[in-house]
Image (cartoon, rainbow, N blue to C red):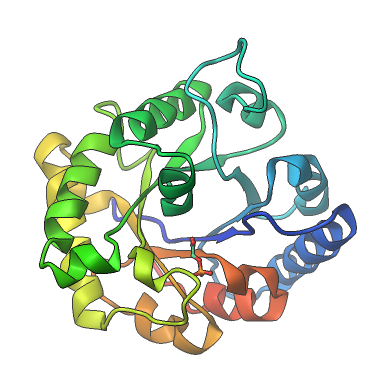
Length: 252
Ligand code: PGA
């Protein structure tokens, strides 16, 4: 088995019900009309729009994901959403450990791992995010940071069949800047090797690249060895641009 490519759109804190219906509906229609083989496709809207998006993509290959979950199944955690509820709402995926969550909410590797474990227990596929800051890269620590994030954030129970990793250099997110293909290749190799030290199926794990992926650079970034798809922020809010990324996903 080799990883089945995945293109996931992270809408972040954007969108209304009307916009979500239009954007998800547009994408579902494109997917239904597609001639060739498609990668796995997921839309990750804000929690309040999950039901709207799930209804809009029903009957298409487009899956739904969330942007975060709580580590516990239920209980006194005001404002949080359990992985169990996300599954009930129609999610297949949940992003955990996005750098914005790590920065804004102080999420540690341990916190991210427990969220990923909750996702697995609920039958969701966690998309576990890792990636260095610009200061860490400048200090020559990018590989070390990603090694410790992968070893600290990925559950022991993860397999290539139930987990996805996204390598997202923090300095490339929302900035229009991207690493060179050689840097992407090297960092994906670091993530894969680290995962492989604790898991038997490293060769089959889907590792996505994220950070300023758009239609105009998708072909280059998605052709890099070891890149199994993309986690897309800004460009996923534009159906035509997101579709260009989807059709440039590796074919396998
Ligand atoms: P971006 O965001 O595509 O807007 O850079 C990527 C991400 O944060 O997942």
